[in-house]
Length: 395
Image (cartoon, rainbow, N blue to C red):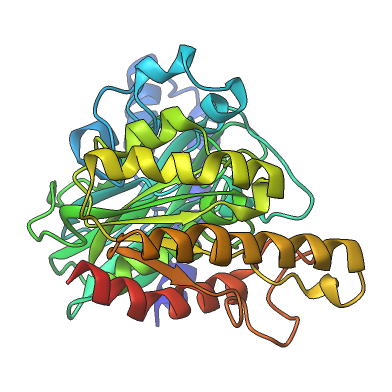
């Protein structure tokens, strides 16, 4: 029915153009032409817009700065869409600082009764990687709260340049809804605007979901940051946020979760319900022995009773063939279990908890892109494995 109406509108539009051209020809031929008449015709045609043409000009855009930003652990950042406090710029390693400008875990919450939602956004770097879908890398991912559950509503597909305008969802029924707009996992945001039909309500959320009190904080690697999902909402921390109905703070720094002490200090500033440490893919056995216990000690000094969950390194599928990699991962997981977790538990840390690697991404070898970074399936499996554990800890 909609297609038929659009076709009919196009026919009327084309037909009207033909009449206009013939009338103009008659006027000129019969020397009845005058500036006044010509302007009248032009203005009359300009006000005729075919009903199928829903252009960006008919939408009202509002800066996302006007709406609630969730997933941010620190208020004193250099710009709104960064993840670490400004004072760390000169205290942490440049690689960590650079990656803190990526928006993983950040999301805009808003309420609207719009029938169409569009987004304009500009990324800071416009990065490309062969093994990562750009929809996850620098795309925008929209979810709607339906009957108490967050469900996928649409995606903003990034263009080839830094700036993109994209209609995410349209033809909605105009009911009041709560939305959550996930920001890019592996790029920064310099500008973000939300567009709705001009007569729609567009305001801050009316419902506290995911609940913002006492978030869960994740510290980890590129996997924690979201590599390599197709959409931002599919990263395992973002998925856990929806499953737990709890805000998460994502401190995943691709290639650089190396137990930096200043990051542990910063984490203690967050009034969290649980801390998840998932850094083994980025550290060596020597670095673990040197830094892991000290990293935990910094957390425990200011957070003596908070649940801390230690996560083993995932079992990469290619370990079946790569014996060096297999030995390395086995050694790191053994150190974490025997030399760190069990020792600290015997010393009386009752709120230290542990997740083994077995089954984290499944046992069929199908959970990764290139043998290391999980796909959507891999992240799904990680979240399913962590969910019952974290749910119990935050109660």
